[in-house]
Length: 148
Image 1 (cartoon, rainbow, N blue to C red):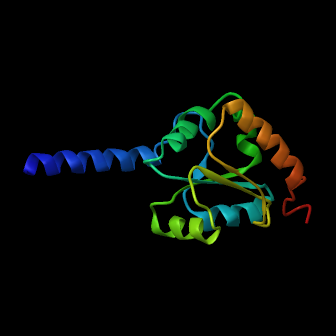
Image 2: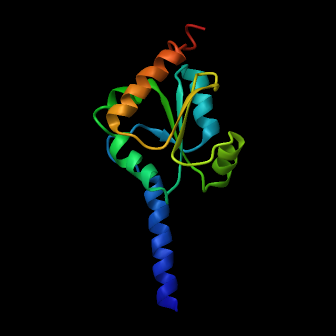
């Protein structure tokens, strides 16, 4: 019985650690929605809020294969990035408040925090890069404190 509990605890810890581990070459993800929105207000860049979960296969594939990919890397500095695990209470409430139903679900917000586009489900690095080009056009030029 103790061995079974130890195995389950090890698996649970591994899953939790995997949810927070980002592969080399990933964008700098915030894990708190409020902090990334404050950063967007300050730097004028659009935000990508990635709603995810450690148990979600497509979420983990996006994290490992898409965000750190060569196709997406040129966009890392053009956005504020948030990776929000819906199993964290505050992130789960935010997920529900947006009336989202599945993960991965990405919200693309302008610098003011208004949703300008979204994506449900995974995709290839090339498809995601095309989406980011579209979102940047929709968001308009970044407004910094010096241009306001």
